[in-house]
Image (cartoon, rainbow, N blue to C red):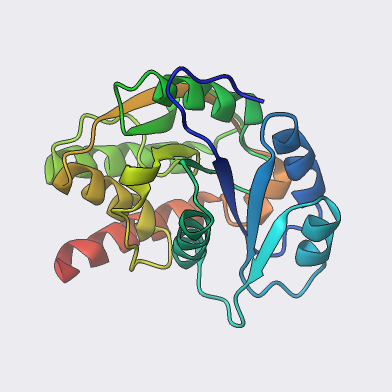
Length: 231
């Protein structure tokens, strides 16, 4: 397990999942090499996602109706805080992220200088990202910098590490992709200390089929616009 200068234990990993039976076992096996406590939030999947996650030793919470990734993260964060989590990792189920990056980010949090560590594909390495999605994400970064004042280089990356105190400030109301912008809003408004970490992000044929497409990029901008008018 990860060795920390500041005590962050127990470390919990929150994995939102919707119909990820094809990859969730490999994702959890990778996380198990670094972390003991993992909770999967099954967002009303119709496949074997929940059963596979349980077989891999994960705690499993299930939404009775499909609510979206933002709602799944909020459910998972509330659960692990109730379990006494000292720090929280959010991690996508679709296999795009490297668990070793999550462990390294936890090491940065352990230094005590930051409240949140945010993964950035733009400071690290990205494989197979569609060009249209890259363009849309650049626009999302520009909007986030303008609206929050945060000098971030990536805005919609599902890999993050929070201290307990920082995670306790999150009360996500955006169920779809706008939750990523909402998290950054909370960081800005709460004046949380943050740092970015260059991660490896791999777009695969599978992840594209799960919504990581050019259309998903347009949905991100739509959700951001909706959030702007709701504030």
